[in-house]
Image (cartoon, rainbow, N blue to C red):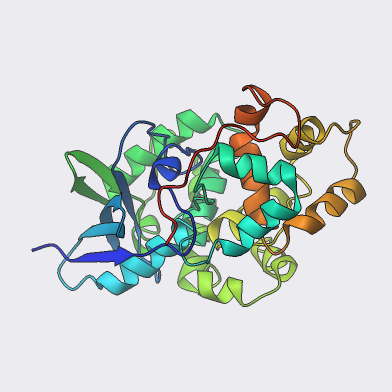
Length: 311
């Protein structure tokens, strides 16, 4: 029988919001109550698939993988990917300090930042998607994963996990991926094998130090090193000053003149500490719900909607 596990969220969490949140590694799937994940396990030697469901008792996972797959290891990685390895009480307090953030929290109840499965997978996506249409490269990555990774049957659907570093290093060519990108993907694979893309290691560093180290990997520049650190490891308190879309939304939400300066954004974000990463993701995900709904004025609160889980 498949191994199972349960994660009890500390503070609000909505699996439905996570399912509907599409970026990089996965499509949004609004309306579904099941989350399907397929990924390389930390250590990057094997893949696993997981089916997740949520009820009042918590988030329940069913593990699919080869014999000997450690369900606790899978549970820990899933917790990081869904930001369930943190207590969200402090994030709620940030919303009490900042009424605009509080309105966004009510508009997207229980939304926490979904992350890339790992720094390795974030780096591979960076190489694949650089200056290419994301949806096109999602299809290429899926074909690559089906051909050279691992495919899992998860709650009636097939989902493919990215090839492990060892599998990537055996690929000489692949349709849709130019030779120079194959070479850079293999550079990512070697970095993973050397431990430079280990999530726990990166989290022990200061974010700027972690980003600087990642820029030593061929093809990883400032933008993508920030992506890997912020959205591949689980840092909760990094303010992404380089995100122009965030600045534009902040200007609308807070009725600020544009362009919003580094100093203005940093000053506003003081109230979000120690969850500035979470706040930035929430702004990008939920601003339209506030600006485009009945509560269009910054600081006003939309109709009350309760998070799915708040133990």
